[in-house]
Amino acid sequence: MKKQVLPVISTLAMAIAFSASAQAVTVEIAAAKLFEDALGSGTTEGPVIQAFKASSAYSGLGFTVDFDIATGSSGSYASQIISDLASSTATYNLFISADTDYPDDIYADYPSSVTSPVVVSEGKLMHWSNGNIDVSTNWPTNFIANYTSPSIGICNPTNGPYGVAAEDMIDDYYSPISSSSDTTQYSTIKMVDNNVSSGTMESGFVPTALHCSSGAVSVPSGATYHVFDDTYDHGAIQIYSGTTNVDTAVATFMTWLASSAGQAELADYCLAF
Image (tube, rainbow, N blue to C red; front, side, top):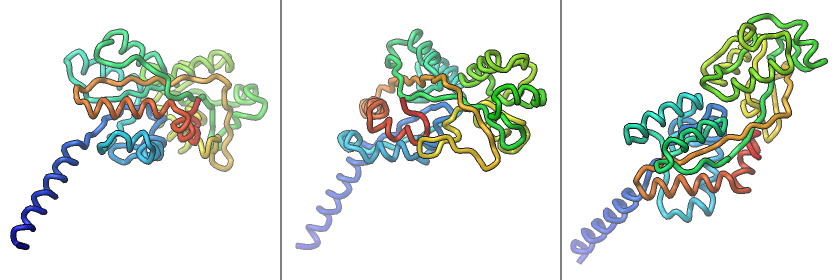
């Protein structure tokens, strides 16, 4: 009898494993670089995604979801998504931008291929220096009198919305400093931050999310910073995959992000409403 039962059990186990495997999906996310600490990178899922996977919203899906997260410049991802949609392909299932303009533009051109944009997060811009110059005392007069050109790092405005924001703030508050000739541009805000950290740049403009601990700005000892009052909305769109479980998982994650539970997690990274 045992010789007859064991093959049946083995076959049943294989069927269950195959069924679970068949239901598992991977969601491809393209997110602005400022979301990396919160969401993770590559197949390493960050704290916010881990919190989602511990939620009832996730367990209610009834299938396993793995997230693959790419982080970089919003402009580059927008261009890639537009190129994909023009050829009826989809590299990514979810795009989270550092602004609302890129998602709005994609939706305007491909309304049947993506969801209507929603705001899932917001952030602020900060000017900081890792001890090379004081950017906070008697702001901005002291900085204007002592800065070195072109040692102010900003993100390339064509790649990242926070580069546009940096230009605006420099033009509005730092005259006669020029947002073009007195700055050095980098392709991502993370590169700006790294060069300020290393001292290559005397100071730089980055989102507060890059220096946030438990919901408050935190910089190295000896560093100085100034946070601007303006807030910037971060928009998201779902790119339809044609696979029911993938599309359901993305829609559920977006809804959770905008919920009080999701915002509580994003707040730790200075990314909540």
